[in-house]
Length: 192
Image 1 (cartoon, rainbow, N blue to C red):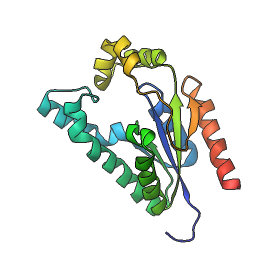
Image 2 (cartoon, rainbow, N blue to C red):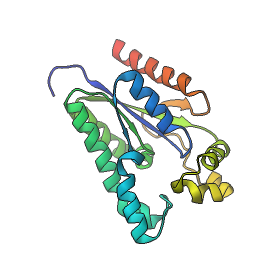
Image 3 (cartoon, helix red, strand yellow):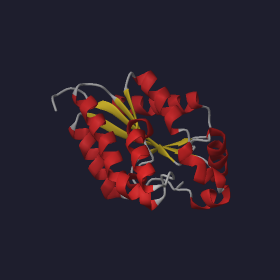
């Protein structure tokens, strides 16, 4: 990396229904950043594999197992390419492993820094009940199994706080408020 200032590399994470894509779009627009949404980037590949294995629930091990590493590699590689050409990035994905495992977060953090980024993990939190209601309203194919079993989803939802450094944000607040809070945190980081 040259002597230029590190670029924002904002990673938006949270449970399904937390508002990751909506917040990610808002942040990317305000930052003039590339939006790299895992669902948008990898949905065509995942659909092919889902049809081959006959499973459409992204949490089902028969689908998650063969696709997880490839989905995240595509996401991070696109982010690295953008950072290397001087474009800030907003990555949208659950980042489940990276939230739970400090070693996995450290590897991701190093990759983004090596490409010229200054990573900030934003964790959108909300109650499982609100998440289940949002999934039912969204009615996306990838959410049908969760929306059909709201009690099971609420009980098993990965809503735990990340183990590593992160910025918590209430996913039940208006999107504009969440985006403003993230932008303020980024401004504080650059003023130090």
